Length: 213
Length: 213
Image (cartoon, rainbow over all chains, first blue to last red):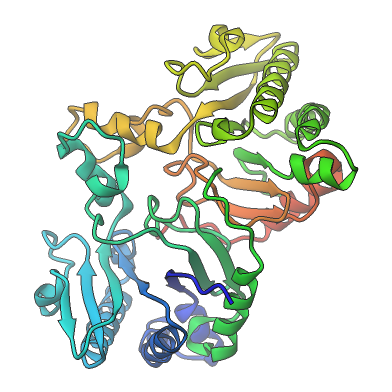
């Protein structure tokens, strides 16, 4: 089986999940923390080399305060939990904005936790505009764009898995996603099941990868 | 019905279509010209304001010569056919490379044909790296990226329709595709049917558009 080197995770549908349960919309985020750890262990077990979680974006912070606080808290906890695993962890996003949680500042340069091994990237207060705007500072004459953006330490994504049924990238690492195969799961992220992951891997295994050639 | 303002078209599967018919792989491109005109007229009829066709990319030109010649010829003919319609036409791509067909140079600034109306963009010898590399020349302090790239005259894409079953963007206008809803049709582009277009519009009509909010 051809296992993707790098998987991108768009864990969408937390608010819709909470609404369906009769909870306040902001109650969905805490239910997304455990699935993130299960998914990490599945990636580790099949030999994935890098995984990127879409935490929250600069756009997301314009939502109602109670939602913003809830997803920020969930991201802080998720990163702390991953830091207890064997992983090479990087939190990336616009740290110059007050929306970036100071609890996560210590994780904004890549560090090895435990025995390391798998690279884990966590997008926090990320913005595709912030990511690409960095190109303006480049003095390189090469058009190797990937090396000259804010997220230059994140490699090309082979497979993106999005929960919650929406068929769009919503600003997730536009440069690294250029050639990504995109698999959508209709169920909401808090309803994550390991079978979703295996279904995505089986589907990816059948794709013809051409990288634009 | 909520009709998308701007539709992106990825007309994939020409070579696989030709192979399935027992033809040489390069024979598929000529069969993709008529569908392009039918689709244009459908867009016009439902009130779409802008449509972008993915002609060929800089990466594509590394394919065998007979394929390259065939898709270049098909693009030249498709643009000439569209120039007989009521449309505001722009061909965009790297004109400084010998792979850009000189027959299309007269179309590289937007021009009104017939009564104008719908905007039609045709990507020819396009490259996402070429598109984004333009940011390095920008002196603007704003991070309004869309205004500072080569394709700044192409607006945000609401709906991308890809034929040929692959679930990836393959470098299609990364900035304008950030929030695009992505609809995939398994049939090959030369097997285009108007029902594909209506299916995509019906699906788009049911999507919840948030633009990252």
